[in-house]
Length: 192
Image (spheres, helix red, strand yellow):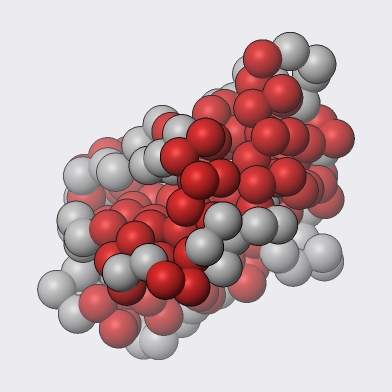
């Protein structure tokens, strides 16, 4: 699942009217952070800061579960917009999205009606980001120290992106998807 939304879609998803103003440096409201992130879209460092602000709010246990989920969705959407198309950027985007979604599922419980908080959807997204088959990854792990750097990098990206599977596995129903996740968690231990 991709969360890449246009600025208009981001605005609509949080009920923000076009042209709504933001007063000063107020980062306490969803709309303020969203609008600041939109304005900073060309500056990756600033946009990343707004992603982190939204993520921190999502993980704030003092906020209501619904507000935390809204902050998490904003962080996920900003994260999708801030990354480039290169393999490291795409891997980082998937990893950060899957990690935050896994945290929210672990802390607030799954919601099978919402793909953001459906553990099966998150696991599927992680597995879709893995660029090798399990047998290919196992074969490369045997003597990874002698591999070219680009192949080691592929293995590192897989290790990074599969990390959230540990939190998600208890929430995934038995079946093929869970079996695949368990297999990757076993392989993950072999990865550099």
